Length: 289
Image (cartoon, rainbow, N blue to C red; front, side, top):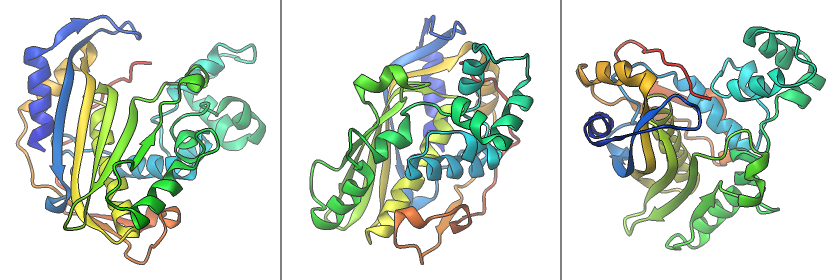
């Protein structure tokens, strides 16, 4: 994962300081690209331990078309909690509950979860119902019937609905490509890239999605290409990314998928096995909301 460390180094040395929506401040560059050959190993960063189950559960949540955090919190995935909690804090029903108390209510109170756990029409909604179009189903059908199409695209950016989303999609458009030797590649355009917290998840998530689609369409693995728009390091993450630059890289792990799965909608958490993952200890960092 030298590509990821090169990104950190590039932004630290070339980035401009910018104020931002969260009032945290960032160092950022505009326009950066990384490429990962998926046949060489699974690109899960090794300079800090990354919680793979959260990545897989979030991806399965997207694929289902779900937009409520109830499924995520039931599986101990916390990455989307801040936004609905903030919405609840601004409501008339808020009674100084802590985040833990809020999450407990989401888990155990169906009515409360329906009211305060939904994030609006975020990723899963757009993948599975973009104005009535199931983009994921269409994509797989198109790969199966017209694999050299230049229209193998899924977009999460739906302008009329942006205002209704808890967070406008950061990773907003993906395009797939099948080579002459039947290798499936994916290029992701990410308009906004939180390099310390978000980007490691995004690399792993879309690499895994590419592997899943390749399996169900009987293709080999190509590349994951990650194209970043505003690539930034928050000022409260500077020590964390600099620590990673001092750490030795480990070899990439191998991701094994259950080969009996023939539909992308049939994968469960038990169908993924990460083999030989070596990583340095986890590094904590606060999400900017």
